Length: 385
Image (cartoon, rainbow, N blue to C red; front, side, top):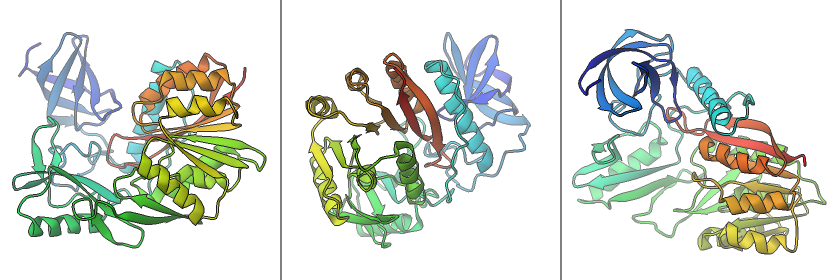
């Protein structure tokens, strides 16, 4: 099959990442902007030995879940993959993807809990990361080279877009990349003008200070839900010690310290580590200890002295280093709460933990990023020996 050839495809499913999956002449075909169940006329744009990539030319049989994308940049800008899909169906797609990932990679057939929806399906991002080249300011296209000039991003809270317009008027040129962030009080900042700004947020009964470039979940409407699930899964008691690895500014640590005897947070970033101590003090917690350094270096040192009852893992998209998982397994930590923004690397990590007698008990997907292919999961893992 050659590039440019026209083919008719029946879309079987939507793969993690957002592309539709079909088959033609015993080869898998990946295609964007389609919905499972649809039949489309398509053109081959990439041909490899084991797969093809195509672009949709015409929808021959339309899904009942197809909607009109409200964003004029959709299908050009790479920021959103699902604006053409009814939101309830987006959640079903993501739930199926999580199940298939664990079944395929970890050989675990566990049905995830229904995906927790976002109260806001647009205008939910408290910060936006813009890129700028010459007179263009916006986000990259799917080729990761072409910059799409965007006036309004429908995922950003309105104040972030307005502030970007203001910056464009004030500056002839802007940095190649910059961040605009909204805090709890409705104030907007950018790391162009406010590089050392500390933002303020309140979640449930706890207050948080967050440096402008430190990690803190972008969808504020789900922060309370996330904290509640982690607290429920941890089930921390007054006589228990908990470890929070990759703890950032101490978001989960602060909530856990309310219930546990002692919480140790592990965070490599110096500034985030310092702010964790500030957040503990600000919330009247003297049982939260933040340790600066790489988890793979600091965790073994502390585990020579203390074994936690529960350990929280919230690693980056790349997942945990195998040595961290093996250390936890060798010490038979009773419970692990694993928070992941990449189910594929989490499924890889659970395979290592399985070898040490751990069982994946619950998977709770949570839709932190509506209209996109991203999905967050919070899981409970127990040691069974």
